[in-house]
Image 1 (tube, helix red, strand yellow):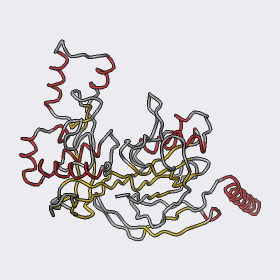
Image 2 (cartoon, rainbow, N blue to C red):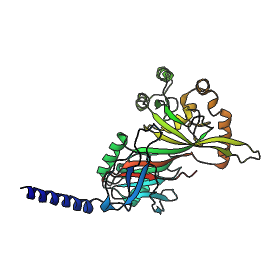
Image 3 (cartoon, rainbow, N blue to C red):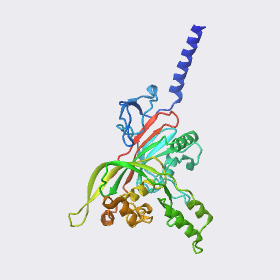
Image 4 (cartoon, rainbow, N blue to C red):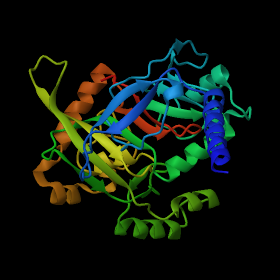
Length: 367
């Protein structure tokens, strides 16, 4: 019996290996992650990982921390598109998902008005199991934000990626250029966000005063309030947390005849939560709006300072914030250069929706 049991186990193991080789679709390259150093880590740093390339037959899943340093870039092909984007930068693609490096100024998804977007091009090029391109959407980036976006090609991949995003198993790293020099090298921004009832559909930091303002707005008979607007605005504020880390303190040269140089800071942003416009509102509320932000920056369409008044900003941050004069000068300099929002999704760390292998994608910032 023992010999039969031993043979049966060997047969099962061989069958399992053959099944993996036959049915697990492998990308051209995958990453094998192993932890080099253990020990505790703080909120912004983590153990570095060692990387080695392996073939599909050698693939194995090794649990690794999300913030491993990427040393291998997934390179993809660039294709002409039909919806206004110059080219579609495909970072990675297989039977289950597609990862794209979205340029700034291009919509991620069509929206209710079905405007041209990156999703149109991904669907036309790759298709999906359901035949409905809306069922490829896993997450999205703002129109002004560039960087990595993942789309699902099968219903199972869509469910698993949605679950991973919801359970915060997916980690994202952004790079931004912000106004002024930060006086601290790292930290966190923990400010709840809500819809701005005065400037919908934009966001703002939730304070005690906002609920009073909202109630007064409802009592004002001249204020047009629809049921849809009430539903959107009455949503309770949501906890929002962002970690940041300074990469460098730089100077922005102007195009005028003066030799004036404007202080700016290059930072990495790690959103723990995924609220609408979270990074943009948090940076503005922190006193250092992102350069090129036409909503929450200088003369933006949304609430300035993330919703805080000038007096409150002076009391909270004193001289550490970027002054209005500095923000105006940077705004004028960017107008002359006609430049973009300086926010880029540079790193995406997730589990493959089918193989559950850890995958790290990297897209260098264009600024």
